[in-house]
Image (cartoon, rainbow, N blue to C red; front, side, top):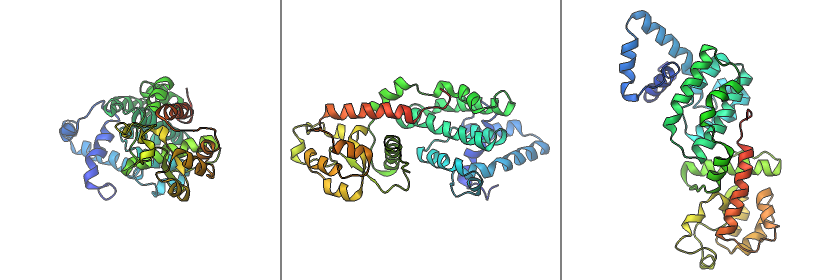
Length: 309
C-alpha cells in the first residue's frame, strides 16, 4: 500500500477513507482518531485490509494512465477533468460509488462530480469546506444501501448543486487569469463551449487552439478609447473577452484593433471566433463584452447541467 500511495499523500488517503463513515475529521486529529478506534490487533488488520482495497483507486484518481481506466475508458475523461479542477473532497463518494455501483453508474457519478465542481468551485468559487459533510453523507448512504442509483446520489448532493440562476450570474461576471494551471482550466471551459456551439468535439488537452484575448493583454493606445486605461485590467481576463483561435491567426491578431482582429477571426475554423468575425459587430467595448459573456453563461448552464435536474 505504501508503494501504491506516496508517503506524503497517505494522510489524505487515510482521512478520505475515514470520511466514508465519519462526518468530520480534521487533519490535526487524524491519527488521534485512528488510535481511538483501532485498539486491538484485529482492528489493525481490519483497517489495513480496508485501506488496501481502496489504495489503488486513490492512486488511479491521480493517474489517467492507470490500468483501472483501461478497463473503464468512459470514466477516464472525467478523472482527468477532476484532476484539473484540483478538488479532492469527493473522494469518499468515489470510494463508495466504485464499491457499490456498476461501471456505467460509476462513470455517471464522476460526470456529476465534474458538473458540480464547475458550478460550485471553478465558477462559483464557493467554500470547498462545505463539500466534505455533503460528500460524506452521500458516500455513507451509498455504502449503507440507502441510495443505489446516480439519480439518488444527486439527491444527496442537491444542496451543493448551484442552480441555473446563480450559475449564470456567476459565469456572467467571472474573470480568470490565463497563466499557470488556470490557463488549462480556461481552455477546458472554452473547449466545452466551442464543442457545444459547433457540434464538433474539442478536447482541452489535445486541441491545438490558443486562447485569444479580444482586448489584448498588452493593449496598444488604440484601445484606450473603448476601454479606460485605468480599468483595462478589469476586462482582459473576463471570460467574455476570451475565445479559442488557431495559433497562426492569433499571432496575426496580437495587439491590433478590433476591426483588424475581426477580419482575422473570420478566417478561423472555430465556430465562436468565426461567428464574431463574420458578424456586423463594429467595435469592442465593456458593454459588448458583457453581452457576449452573458450569452456564454446561458450556454454554460446547458453544458454543465446535471442529468437529473
